[in-house]
Length: 251
Image (cartoon, rainbow, N blue to C red; front, side, top):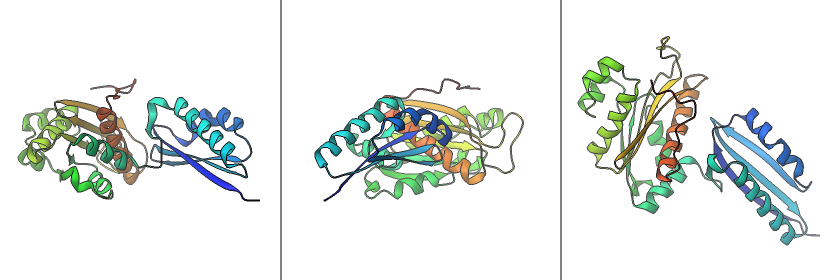
C-alpha cells in the first residue's frame, strides 16, 4: 500500500534547545504516532519540523495542517517564517515586497551580515552594500560617527550603533540599515562590557531601534548570534511587530 509523506516547518527565534523541549513537551505528546517532530537549533534560530507518513493522504494533510497551526499559536510572537526559510531569505522577501533597499554597517560581525544576505539569490535587488567599520577611524571618517560619542561612550554603545546605521543609509542611499558593534572575544572585554556584549541597530526609513545583547560562547558563536539577532530585529521592524526585550537595559 502506498505511503504518503508530508512536511511542515516553523522557524522561530529566541529559544535555546532546552527551552524548546520544555515548551513543546505537551505538544509532542499529542502527536499521533505517524507524525514526528524534530528541532534544529542554530544560534537561537530554530527550525521546528513536522514529518508525517501515512497511507491516507487526505487525513495526513488535515492533521499536518492542524498541528502546523498549533505551532503558530504557540510561538506567535517569535515566528520568523511558517516555512523552511532562513532569516536572510525572510528579510529579502520583505524588502522585495515593499520595494525597499538595505545596507549594513558592521564592526564585530565583520561582514557576516553581508555574507548571509548575498547567499540569497536575487539579493542584488535590495542589498546595496556593507561597510566593515572595524576601526574607530572608519566609523568616524566613512560613516560619520561622532568622535565625541566614540570617546565618551565607546564604540560598543547605543549612540555609536545608532549613528552607524544613520551613516550607512546616508552613504549608500538606502531605506533600511543594520549596524553592529560589540566584543566578540576572547579578549577585549571589561567589567562594564564583558566579552559577548553587542550593540545592534535596525533602521527602517525614519525609525531606528537599538538593543544591547550579551551572548555567551566562543568568538564565532558571538558573531553568528549577533548576526541572527540583528536580522530578526530588522524583520520585526519591517513587520511592525518589533518589541524591545522585557529585560532590555539601555545603559
